[in-house]
Length: 439
Image (tube, rainbow, N blue to C red; front, side, top):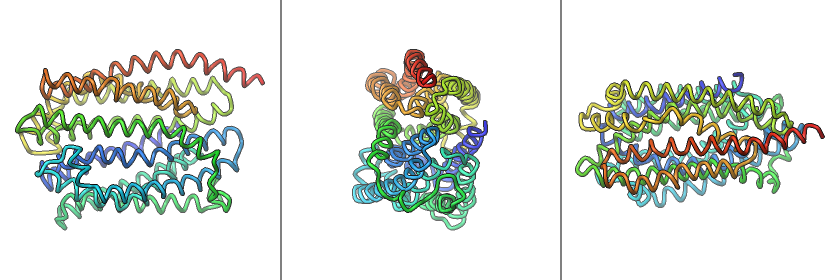
């Protein structure tokens, strides 16, 4: 609870901001702005993918090093992650700005929505170097024993964001660009907070002269472990593209409204998923540390508790969305057509949602103990092998309902596979750790 609760609070605040921000955009700019924001989701996933590639890998390897009592190696990770975040960010910023319009059109933007998507992403991309360093160091802060400080940085980002966004959107009439600027203002505040932490010698792990030298061993471990969340975000990018195109193709003249409705459903789903991510973030340093220390009892106990909490969260998400789809949809927009599509989508999309929490925890469990291959396997099977074929088949027969059916069907299949994989692989991991503990 000492690690998970601050991470859950931070994730909850971020989730609430994402919803409030969408409400501001829907109410202050219009329904097509909601659709424009939905069009940016795959590009945002792609941008995040190149950040988590190093941020999550760095957090995991630093926890394992601390469990092995290798404080110098954990310190080396800080400088290496900062440099890698900057390099990745510069590449993404330049490439994104140069090819922004073609990318957005590929993701499903139309003449009515591309202006909103372009204005939002131009601001977000320009701030990517600072955002990457903030996210990378914030993950390290949590992993190296400061979960409350990591929570404060997230709350600071969200708090500034929520205060500034309505000022930019409603008072200064800056439209969707104002929402993006508010996001950047919040991240700048959190960036300064995180930077001060790692500049202080009082921190267990902090910037040192030697940490800026890139270590091949650290890089190898960071990229190997970070490959799982990287591929997961890349797959999420591809999935959103397929979903947007399936909705545009099956909804006819209401295609833009259907994409906007998916944006509402996706934001709502991410509200609960982000809470579950808070659980996995709290689990990660405990799993990594005790795996490094060969304490199988604590590894298994942490996994079981994480699955229980995440399942409870996903059950609550299922109940609320099935009971109040109209209320939730009406928060984001006043467009009756978009509300009707979203209401129907909520009913089907969340049908097997209670299984989602456990599947996410199991996938992140393998990542946290330095077994990225299994995490990658579970991620790819859910989003590529299961979901994309269903998206190719079901919408042709059931129209827009087929899109929602494809997503909920992949959830239950992925859950069953994750459960079987965990039970089989854990027997082997348990034996390995018990042997290592005896040695």
